Length: 139
Image 1 (spheres, rainbow, N blue to C red):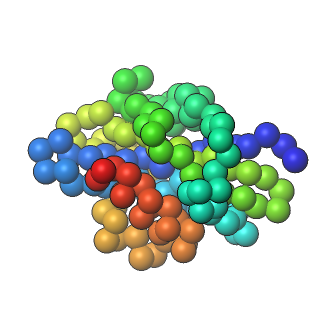
Image 2 (image 1 turned 90 degrees about the horizontal axis):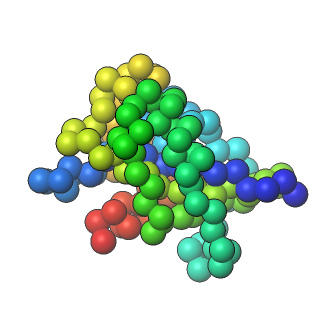
């Protein structure tokens, strides 16, 4: 089996109100391509003991969105694993450091920001994943 892929969920948490929004593209919230159709999210207690730092995925996200290098930071306290018949996918979390979400950058790549309550149209695996991310982000 090939080495695991690394993907990110991109989140903005408003410093003053704690409002949480997720970057959502046409493919969903796991950047920047859809999860394979038969992906299964592992329960948190089934995660491998060693994880991969999402630095490379973070650099790709910054470049894809044409942001300043410090506009996104990895939240290394969160990770999830998705399994498919052909690969394993590490799903990390990155947070926007800007005061407001970078709406213009999102629009340039055909994406927008959604709240957790707007995730009904996402796949079941993405809704489950966002629930875990939200729980982590809110502490």
